[in-house]
Image 1 (spheres, rainbow, N blue to C red):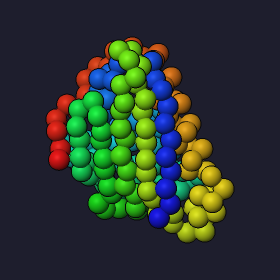
Image 2: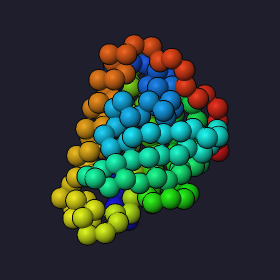
Image 3: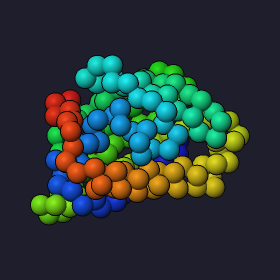
Image 4: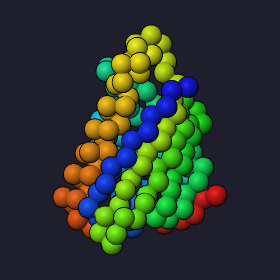
Length: 150
């Protein structure tokens, strides 16, 4: 398994960052390689991704969710193996640190080489930078999932 850890400070309150992150269907707006996400149940999402011409579909289960604090997941079926957690840290009333930690299993030679060259780390950093732009330009979130999963 490979690991990546990245964080970014965003200029919004912690509840805004958290609520926007839990609107999984908006991920294609700021996550490169994510074509579509469907929230099928309170804890199950279906992902369709395309990275470097490789299309994959998989299901991920939310294994832990605490409003304004964290969302953890693991894949449960499909063509990808990963698990991770996103945590939200209040810096002050209008700033939040968003930290992403993820473990993943590269598939095949191309993904293994890409991982060794830092492709996933750069992609994750870019995704968080686009999330920052997305949330700061968008203004208040339009919803979000506030339920608890333990």
